[in-house]
Image (cartoon, rainbow, N blue to C red; front, side):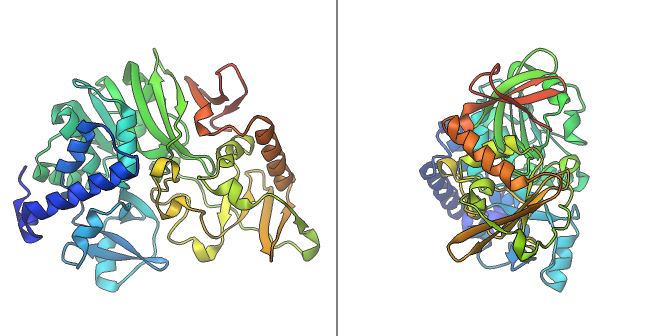
Length: 419
């Protein structure tokens, strides 16, 4: 592993080794990292090689940051997600560097190390397994996989050719050489290899059938779901043909979606008259915040319903933006705490519900073809009557295009994955 020029410039190998060891201690303390083989990978793989530059938040804009800036190395080895691309355009970093902070939507990042550790451990790899990664990004996750499994056992694909080329360069600099490809990750890896494990470091609205067909029976798929509510991690076990079954994982995580799985912007909200508002006892936070146990169940009972953020809070943190881990089992960050600025729910049929606080009083107004907040309150009562099931009580069955969640048992209460 030849990373001498960078490590010498920033205090030598010992300095970056200390930072990696510190990061590992933090991940262990957060209950995100346990397996000695993955501990060794995080202690060894130099994250700074994959992050010579990235964006940092500057109010509602993004500032360009690189290794010449004070604090670069500490940011690289922090527990934070680091945004590396805006609006699918890697040239915007240079624009922000030249002209100052710019607006934009994050479209690629180096994920929070905690959620990376959680997903890698949930993959349950063993020696000799072949692993496919969907979403190459910076290449750091592929390097961790290559360290654990050997470069020859790892394949990675990304739709963005520029990202793949840069990741390939960084992987070589760090001493790893997994198979890389440019293409639509929902179609699997182009060589047609069968894999023991598939991991997607982006979110999908439904599980692509190609992943099931390219995973050996009994192999695992770990991915996050791109849902406006109740997203998060699932682990599936592939069957024969395009079938699989699995569980929703208690340790949650939210990721930006694959390009073909992005959600459209929500429609404009009407402004209700004063007479339309009524009191409610259900805080909107219970419905839209991942750390609230009701949020996942709400997503099942309210298919397609989306939270809408106050425009004052939206530019740097939309639901299509960077990793948004809920604080289950310690895997938290700012976005996992009660997300500020949500003011409404909207449904695909045009139904809507606005929410506000008047002192200590909670109020809602609703409109459209359905009384959306009434449905939300009914969903809460149902969840309560079922014993308030948590995320881990739910499973997921895939039988070709039929994909559905279930509670406690595949033959029990069920909900379609895609409404």
